[in-house]
Amino acid sequence: MISVKRVRSTGITILSIFVFLLAAWNGLRLGETIFFWKTLKTYGAHPLYIAISGGVWFIAGLLLFWGLWFGKPWGWAAALGGTVGYFAWYWFDRLVLQKPHTNWPFVLIVDIILLLMVFAILFARKTRRFFKRDDYE
Image 1 (cartoon, rainbow, N blue to C red):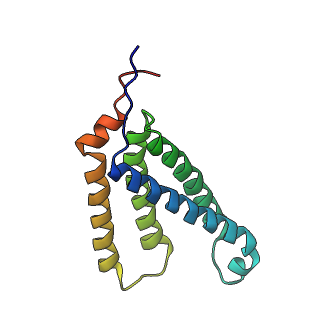
Image 2: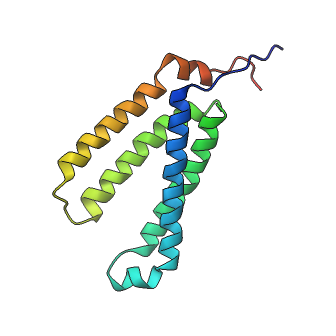
Image 3: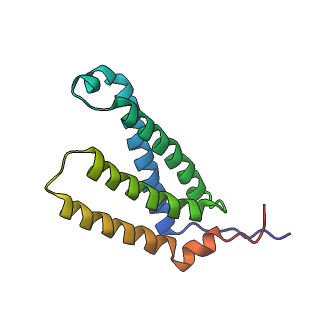
């Protein structure tokens, strides 16, 4: 069986780093929630929800980073699902669980631009080739 060395595209490298930073951010959310649990409860926040969501996105982000960075066969689909899932969760949290913000049109435009950038990276020919498995490791 001939193994062909696959080269990670610049887009996947950037997306992987972004996913890693997002995972780290959620890991910090989890840690800070545990550290400031009593303070959050005092001010009416929901520390259990913050800790669970931070922990879930921390673990999911690290797994997704690993799948993207090493070109795992499931990495492409996980990136697509993770992107849609994260943005859906973000907007659910923002619209349902938080008090209304006046800057929502700006955030929506930025989110749409980010989604389009991620989709452009994921659907690029180089990206699809990177995740295609011919050697069936």
